[in-house]
Length: 110
Image (cartoon, rainbow, N blue to C red; front, side, top):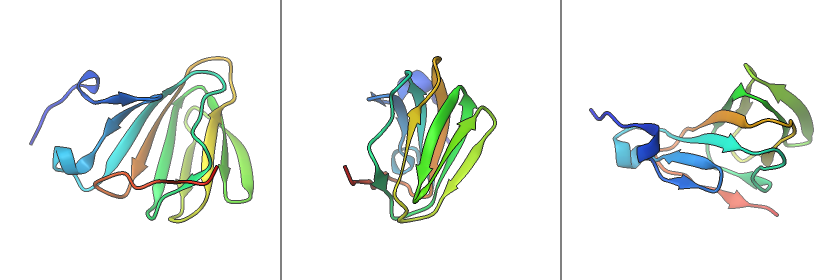
């Protein structure tokens, strides 16, 4: 068992990174704090990802589908599916992206 604070996690780009294999957990998570216009490139993971939008709004692309997701929205992204998000609002986007892996594995497509 471990107790940690968010500020103890590495902050890279726009996210705190919770790496499961470091914390003794079977999953990993990005705790996103994105400024307007910010977002990752189109990418894939070899496992399922679930994105929970906590605050703000984002335009999320999953495969050939694109939708605006607001606070309270949950998106399930199948393994191997190209996806990305961008903060499409004018306030901070906060989301928690759960990765069904104890470590991050990402292939950027752009």
